[in-house]
Amino acid sequence: MTDISLRLDARLGRIHARQRLGIEDDHEAQIFGQGLNFFHLENWYSIHAVIRNGLRFTGLYGRGCRNAENVQLRVNTITSATLPRGFDGFRILHLSDLHTDMSGPAMDRVTELVANLDYDICVLTGDFRAKTFGPFEAAMDGVARVRASLKGPLYGVLGNHDTVRMVPALEDMAFAC
Image 1 (cartoon, rainbow, N blue to C red):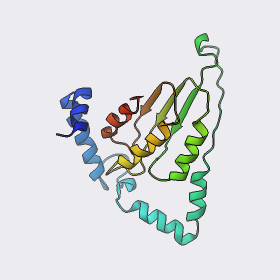
Image 2: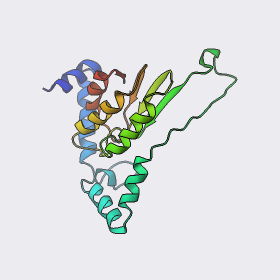
Image 3: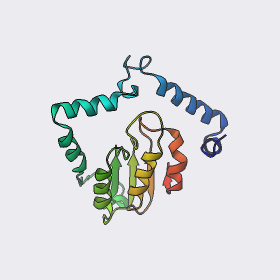
Image 4: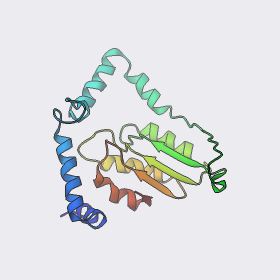
């Protein structure tokens, strides 16, 4: 049994950890099958190559890479009369759908943008990795790069591309998951 399995057993309980891992393994294997859509395109092992080659064929690949690297910071102010006074001026840094293993330059831009921000908490909501299956270590390496520029309380939520096997690595980086 791996360290990840032991940690998930301790965190979720052996039965729930095994159930979750089994569900994920079944989902990763599905290209055709259950759910709202009969065909799960994101689980097709070749889809990324098809998209990449399609974009190259149409001459749009370079433009897509430049667009991915053009990460923007948006500030949204929310006001509500029902919000407790203690939250007046409270700032949340929300990072989502980073797909950290897809573009090093995009992650460089993210780390540059967040390095000197003033916020009270940071929430990273999945997807941390590009694919919905397979190895996730490159995605965790990307999260670690971004993590180095973050401060304060950190919270992480997995997305549909992510695996529960990522939780111990996120917790090691001081994310509450």
